[in-house]
Length: 197
Image 1 (cartoon, rainbow, N blue to C red):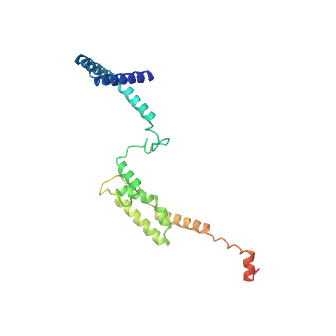
Image 2: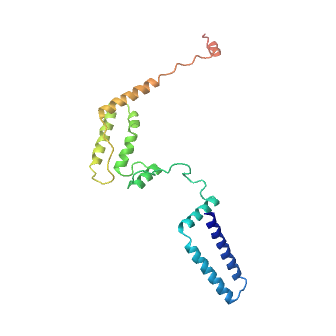
C-alpha cells in the first residue's frame, strides 16, 4: 500500500509544481498545457478507489496524532453488542445528567427498585417499611397498565413479608457490627493525675 501512497504524493507534488509555473508569467499555449495536465491529474485522482483514499486519510490523521487521547482508547465501547433499545437516548441522558423524577415510569421504577433496599434501611419501624413497599407495589401495578404509553414495565413487585424479613436481617447484622468498642484505658499519667491506679 505504501507504493500507492507514494505515487499519490508524487502526483500532488507535480500538481503543486504546475501551479507554481502559472504565477511565473507563461504563454497561452503553456497555460493550455497546464490546464490539460491538471485535468489529467483530476481524472487520476477520481480513479483512486475510496478504500485507498480512506486508508491514506486515516494514516495521515494517525501521523498527525489526531487519534491520540480518545475517550475510550483501550476500553470497551459502552453499549456495543447490546440489543437495540429505542429509548437509548433518554436512558443515556438520565444517567449522564443524574436526573431524578424525569423520564418514563418504567425507567424511574427500575432505578427506584435498584435503590429501594437502601431507602428501606433508613426507616425505623416495620410499619414504615410496609407502607413504603405497599406504595411501591401500587405504582408498579399502575405503571403496568400503560395508560400513558412508554417502554414496557419490567420491574417486579416486591413481596412485603419477604422484604420485611430481609429488613430485619439487615438491621440485626448492622446492630451486631456496631457493637461499641471498649473505651481505651487511660494512660498511666492520667490515672496518676486523677488519683486512680
